[in-house]
Figure 1 (cartoon, rainbow, N blue to C red):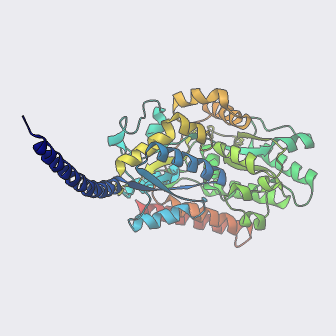
Figure 2 (cartoon, rainbow, N blue to C red):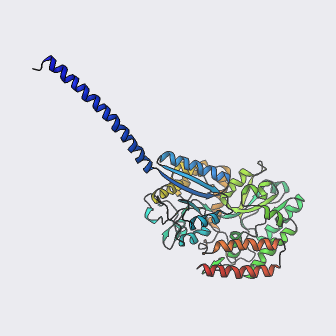
Length: 443
């Protein structure tokens, strides 16, 4: 049996050991905390994300980023957004400097170019793992693939159309455009509106320099704008196109050269948004923003397919994958890039935030969930997409490498013609020769 003295001695010794242990424990805990902090810091991932669009798109996308960060506390996404103008010029510079953002909003027109330059991340290894594509339309997966590799996920399905002020049409007693209308019908309506409204008002924005809208005009002849890596548009087609817009400018059926030159791609600056025109050419998903930024908030906007050719060989209208989301080939965190893209297109909360601002969702199950909650404008978009799906032709292959330069040259040719800086014939000839040379050197 242990004596009382020994118990006291052992008790004191225990206290001493306990104090020492506590002291060492505190020291170790502090060290451990420092190591954990360093470990957490090492686990912290920062991604950069770039996109173009309106303020509406910026706000919605930022909300989705914050939601993703809440669900993935170790991942931070730095937004880098802008308007359309200069977006791909900046991206090209970043790619050349090996400093492009990890997550890139990509356009169908530039997909081939950036993919074959080795700038985009091959998402194929992440398909149906971090990136679920089972409920995505197969045609949209095909649209985002180049050389049998998946480089882009469709954020939404769009179609080109004519946005029009339905309230103004009603006020002027003009019937809203029908799905069967032609370019002649469009010109007649635009001219009548300008005449009825008087000085300072235009029937339509002049979009003669918009390559993607001219493409529909060419497709109506039965051919694509580009085939086998070169441009197929003829002198006659370009002349018909530019002459139509020149005539419209003469009677204010289309905006003047000065007004057009001062207009940007920001929807807030478009004549229909400012209340100085009745029509504009845009993508179906843009109807929402057009409605939100319209000066006349009591006016309702509508959308109709692009006018048909008088003797068209096929319908030029087509369904197009809206903005794509791609990854940067040199990203240090490709798995997390795939995770965020998946979140944007497949997460119910995220897709509810984005709605159809970038187009009708590509995920079939998400579309079903959204239907009952659609706003009036969104219902118009869904109905429009339904119309185009029934009355359209298959989308042309992605634009060839060198398209960016051709696109710039086309806009420049349009401006030269509008301002009378040379003969239309010479400008058209120079454009075609330049486009063919550019495309040939890019292959």
